[in-house]
Image (tube, one colour):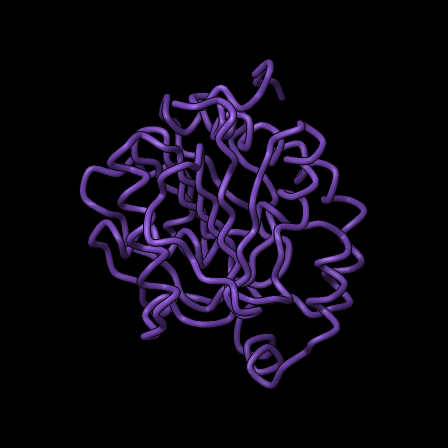
Length: 247
């Protein structure tokens, strides 16, 4: 694996950029290329020349017949076949599940806002999430993934049981590990009818006031979890000068 090969970041919407992931890669001097399909960037046909793959979220369904989504799935499978580490955030995790043959369907309950995540008591889960039994993470989804065959189930929540799975060095997440304050502020400013209806129907859906009131309490711990997980993701690549995983 080429330690100088950049990370490829696939962005589905111009308003849904890498946020904390981008900052983390810059802070660790990891070369990366962000392709925004909504802005007209074409996803490559092959994963050749890249050292790792990250997939971001988006408001569309993973099941929508968009050529960019199907190409993202093709790149996921190419990367996995070559041992190039893949990480998926929300829609990105759903695309990983689909690529591996699992279904993406309506979530048992939508989740929006700061939600508790339970870490399963397995070596694989502890490797990614640390020894803590739970974390608070930022959720924003109406659909959810099933578990592909051979995947390790890592985390769950009361509203949506499949929150994370791994396949070797690859990690799929239902939540938004990449969130930062700027992205959060832009999201809560775009209140929709669907979001308002979900607030009335589900305890797992917070309103903008609740989300913003809790951000000071949770953002720091959320980014420390991101530090751990992103280090674990890139550990096999040689892209980091020194990989130390601590909590």
